[in-house]
View (cartoon, rainbow, N blue to C red):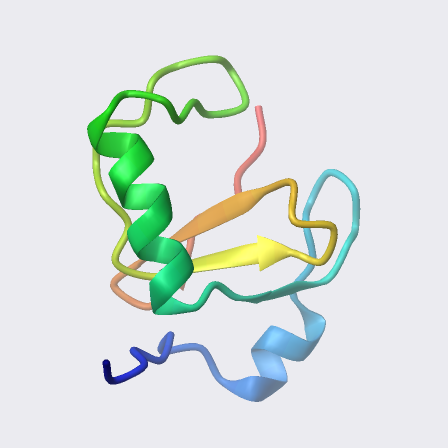
Length: 82
């Protein structure tokens, strides 16, 4: 399987961090995205507010502790917190 690369420059990735915990983020590999999407299809994934996520991921970032995934839509990381 060809690895899909997130359209984020290395320089930007080097400075991005979780807005809540300040932990660094890395690109979530395709095999992990597939696993998350399987769970999304089964309505087992929720956002920070407890809402069920119903849209599959195409690209994503993962915090270094593995606890938070941020979707990337059209090359733009969605990292807003409520």
